[in-house]
Amino acid sequence: MKTLSWLAAAIGLGAVTSPAAANPAPDQAVIVRFNYGSTDLSRLFDLEGKLEATITAAKAGEYDGNEVAVDGSDGILYMYGPDADRLFQVVEPILRATPFMNGAKVTVRYGPPADGVREKVVTIAP
Image 1: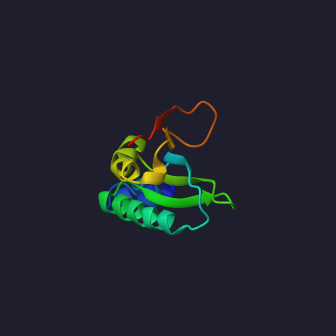
Image 2 (image 1 turned 180 degrees about the horizontal axis):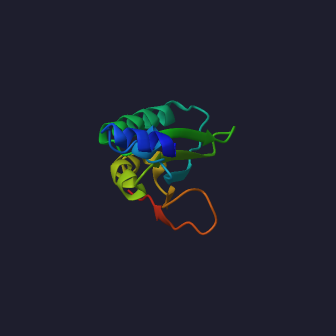
Image 3 (image 1 turned 90 degrees about the vertical axis):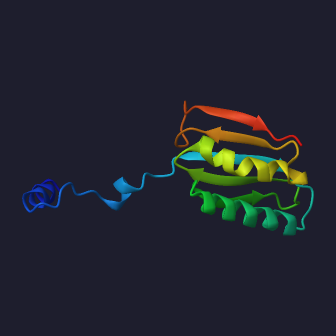
C-alpha cells in the first residue's frame, strides 16, 4: 500500500484511502431491552419499520434487528452508528410514542462491545 500511495502522489491523485477509511465503522450502539408480552409480533414489526426508515432518512446509522423470547415476554432491539447520541436522538421520539416501550431500558454505548467502554442507560417513560 505504501508503494500505491507514493505512486498516486507522484501522478497527482493525492492521498489514497480505502472505502473503510472513508466510512468509519459504526462502532457505537443503541440497544433497547423491553417487555413485549405477546407472541403476535406485528406491533414489533411496525416499530422496526419506523425505526429503520427514520434512521436511514437521518443518515444516523442502521437498524440491525431484534431478539425476542419465544414466549414473547421480552426482547432486544439493536441499532448501530458512528454517533450513539445522534442515533438515540433520532429514535427516542419513536420509542416514547410506542406503548410497549414504556419502561424499556436503552443502553447508549460509546464504542465497540468491550469491557470499559462508556455507556449510559435511559429508561423510556411516556
